[in-house]
Image 1: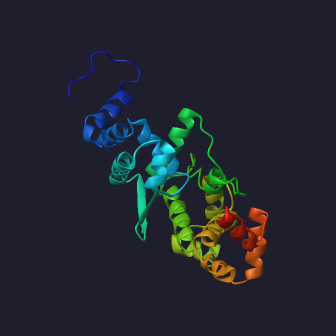
Image 2: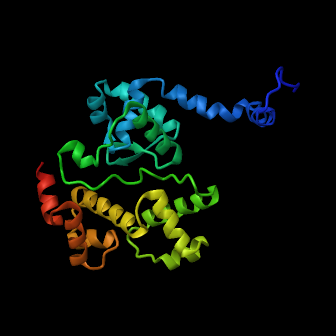
Image 3: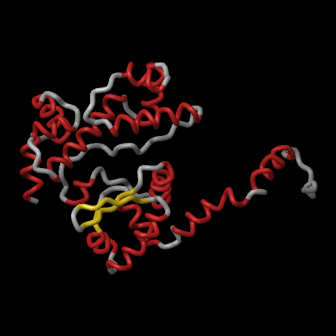
Length: 254
């Protein structure tokens, strides 16, 4: 490529930038994403699924469109990797994907339209007691990219093993990071300590199990990593201001 028509003090920087933009395919994914979100109904569906897991019928009612139209939008969002689905019997449920792109897009939507995140799914539906929103940070402006990726891997590992009690020493050995550094970076990225953050995940998972399964409180406690039912009950009451049995009875009647 030839020289630029005008020479300014930022010539060297412009040359570096030009080396990137000469490869338009690098930006094609962004262009495809913008094209996908050119429909406001699709944006609203995606935003809803950042806060809840729902079926086509309920989503179509919420957005005010036919089920076939909602299915069309869901198929496009799923093909793009922004949402995922799971089947329960004949019903299919959709939710936002747990990916960096989906999380960033969620933040962009809310900052653009100045929407305040609902605190939880239960608040959207019934005004139930709720926990503060999870994982809205996932960003660390001062962290090297390599360390940020390790912290994300730690987070992913912990949330996939909520039934296990894992020490900071075990994490340190597995992910080859100093324990103090790991704790400091985790708090900077996710806004709370490892223990507090994972405890919140455990409580959210427990609340879902109490409503979606017939497991006993003791079984739910073990599933989310509590050998002691009394310890689990105490933590649950701190989070939701009621006992697990009361939570199940109240919200299954709603």
